[in-house]
Length: 288
Image (cartoon, rainbow, N blue to C red; front, side, top):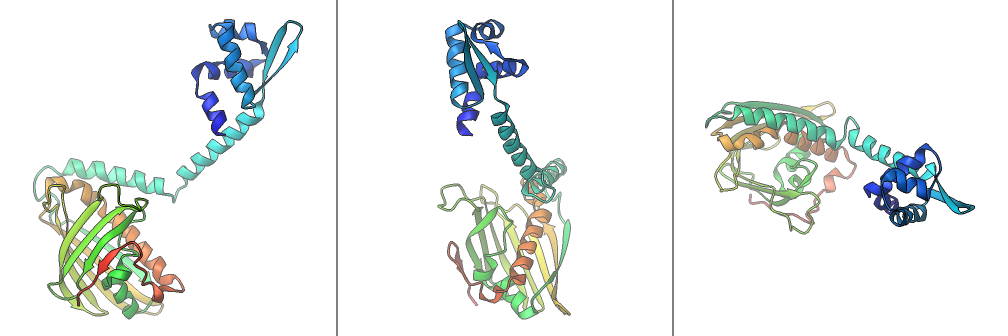
């Protein structure tokens, strides 16, 4: 497939493929129609023949070439599968497009400091685990690291001190940046306000701008209630101290934190949720 793509990438060879799609033709006629010299046309045809997209036979003094449609159909099918993968309704491309719409809207709205103050976001998830286990996933860094970022990111440093006045640090990178060679995607710092194990967790968290300043302050309030199937979790975000530069961060809250909660729900639904203590690639620690 790579050799075929390389051969077809040349405009002169692609022109010859188009001419041969109409009907078999001789080298001389192809050269005339393509407006090229015959030796160059012969070389291009030989390249196409090596990758199997054309075939030839000698007839008297002429060599006539014909198109072999099979390889083109295989290529078309491969390209169609790629397009279908990218275009599936619930795939990453849909989230990318949704985020793009949000980015444009928030950038237009961010005209003055405080533009997003008191903006709120509400989330609800029914989780397949009791409040005690859910609480551990909300407060223990080793467990937080498995779900506290959207799907395309990973936590590279995490501090969560689950006590009033405790410090929070969340640094994350691209999920596929395994060696840390790319720049840090984002960093947020905050402080814990209220801790009621199994019932309520409240904290403030501020993403940092490239210059180290605060983009905004998110006041996050998480409430847990036992349910027949596990735990109902309600999360409320309220923004203050928003800067003009915070537009891109605000645009990602609803989609990004929603993805994180979906990851939490999937983690707790897994049979081995109680054993999720792996901290392979995360510098995570907790101070109680």
